[in-house]
Structure formats: structure tokens, C-alpha cells
Length: 212
Image (cartoon, rainbow, N blue to C red; front, side, top):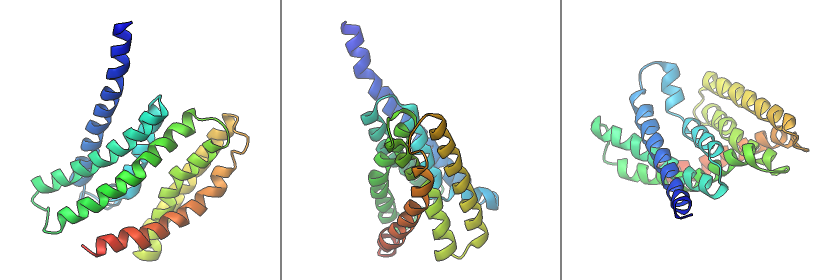
């Protein structure tokens, strides 16, 4: 009995440690791949890359509260890995601390949500699974709007829209086969959430980054 209790106590530590380690690797890898090819440059210099992996981490974890905690740890570790690599690469400028703080705060806000969303799509019950699917896909769709409407990178925006549409379709079909009654909510709410994500990024995140 004591061994079982100790195992249950150790498991969350192992899960969070593994999540942090992966986040550090992901953050450093995204920095290291900058400037290699145009495709990798865009794919690694992307909010979606970090957030989608955070949702994947949540889907792999059995306990819902732990998935949310892992989401926060994942995002903080990814930020840490990215800016540590930036420091080692001697590109961490004077405004680096402020930028790192903003992205870390955004990760603390969004990480638990995406960890929960990944867990819910795979292990949840009821129509909330469809809502969780839309939470995941809205990130890609929202970034597509930001690339097109804010940065005028229309070609890249089209790619992100296509990826977001494919991801939405995949999750909607997955939820339908899993027996979710209102599986179609994923497809309906994804573009609405994408617009909300874009407006939040434009009105809050860009304003904070611009003030540093």
C-alpha cells in the first residue's frame, strides 16, 4: 500500500518533469531552426507550433488537473528554452527580458487551457469535447488571420488557413466517430474562435509587445 501511494505521488512529478524537458527542447529547437529554410522559419517562428504541442501533451496525460498544469509548465519551459538558446546565440537584446516576460505570461494564461483542451478531446465526455477541439484549431486559424490581415503575408496565411481547416476537419471526424452528439460544434466554433484569437492577439499581445 505504501509503495502504491508513493507511486501516485511520484507520477505527477515525472509527468511534469518530462513535459518541462520536452518544452525546453522544443523552445531551443524553434530558435535553432530560424533562418534555415523559409518553410521552417515560418513553422518555428509561430505561436501555433508551441500551442499545438501543448495540446498534444494534454492529450497524452490521464488526469485532467495534471494536463492543465502540464500545459502551463510546457509553455513556460518552451519560452525558457527559446530565450536560453537566444542568450547562448548572443541574440538576446536589451528588450529581451520584457518580451520573454510577455510571452511567459501569455503561456501561463493559454497553456492550461490548451492542456485541458487536449485532454478533453481525447478523454472528456459530452459536447464539451467538440468545444475543446475548436479551442485547439482556433489557434491556427487565428494566426492565419494575423499573418494575412496584420503582416500581409498572404501566401503564408493561405497555408495556415489550409492547415487549420484540415485540423478542424480531422478533429470533427474524430469526434463524430467517438460518438460525440454535437461533434459539428468543433467546425462551427473553430472559425469564431479563430477570429477571437486574432483580435486578442492584435489588441492585447501586440500592444504589450509594442510597449516594451
